[in-house]
Every structure is written in structure tokens, then in C-alpha cells.
Image (cartoon, rainbow, N blue to C red; front, top):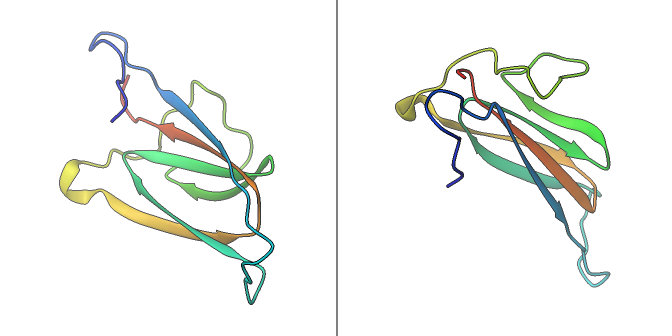
Length: 98
């Protein structure tokens, strides 16, 4: 759980960064990995600096002040996934409201 700031001024964007290593002994048959996220309200997953997976955010450059394009409530939060090959994963999680 991540704190989102005071009610009068919520943080729009939260950043997560994780570097990981895939051991050479692990064989990935098609050269891809799959990521699965639970999103409320939007997110972009960057792989090696490139947007690989988007949910509720527009294509192209997204500034830190850009809110998600939809509000996703507790009952509607869903997992989304994407496939990629990488060692560095960065995620921008977004809220719809400020």
C-alpha cells in the first residue's frame, strides 16, 4: 500500500523501479516475460526506458501531472498484463483525482 498524500492535495503519480536478473540457467522459450499488475486508476510499465504496457493513460509522452483517463473503483480494479523481454522495469502508477 502506498500513501497518496493529504486529501487536499493527493499525489497524482507514484514511481516504482525494479532491476532484476534472469539467471542464464532459466530458459525462456520465446524470449519473453509476462507482467501482471493490479491497477487503480492507471499505469504505464516501462521496460528499459520504453513504454511497454499502458492502462488508462494516453499514448505518447505523459507528464507527471497527467491524471488517468478513467476512475477505477475498488470493485472494478482489474489486472492487466503484457509481455516483454527485459531486466529493468519502471512503473508509473496514476490516480484520476487530485
